[in-house]
Amino acid sequence: MRKLISVLATVFIFASLSTTVAQSKLGFGLKGGINIANQTTTGEGLNVNLENILRFHAGAYLNYFVLDKLAIQPELLVSGKGSKWDDPYINTKDLLTYIDIPLMIRYQPLKLLNIHAGTQFGYLISALQEDLAGGEKVDIKDWYNKADMGIVLGAEANLPYNINLTVRYILGLSEASNDVEYIDPWKNNFFQVSLGYRIKGR
Image (cartoon, rainbow, N blue to C red; front, side, top):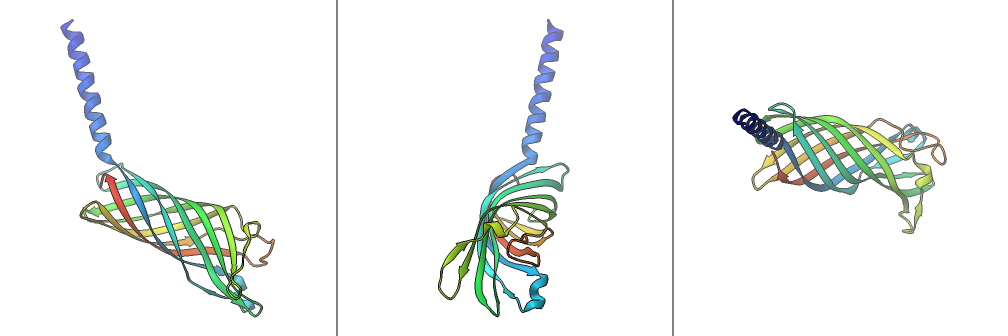
């Protein structure tokens, strides 16, 4: 009986320690901020001029430290992309909204700083084109592919009061547009500046 109690106590202590260690490696929080969005296209050779537009993003993140300074960090964001553009016939904005899922490797050499890189997968939920002359908006969701993919490079400052300040650049890899309207493929690229709140973790 004593042996059984000893074994059960050992298992319980081990399980408790394992849970504590796992929890200490886990972090999550909320974030939001601005996207300085633009697009690129080979159509620039046909007098297409593209400019940055200001969009927004918001969502949540989760990280898990597999090593002391190395973590995996997935996120779920609603994110605005697109561009202001014109050619000899039109002056307009393409306003795109995606559900983005960045999946990154995070390296934290210092308590107050981490750098991260990875891939980002997006799913298009809205696409509007705004005529800057008349202000009219039309649905152009059929002009764009549902899926979007890019590379994420960034750095983050872990500030007091559980605040994070993150700066990233996302380079589009896949063709965001299809051939319904745009002959030349368009890709999404943008800078992202976020403020986050760490609910748990580091």
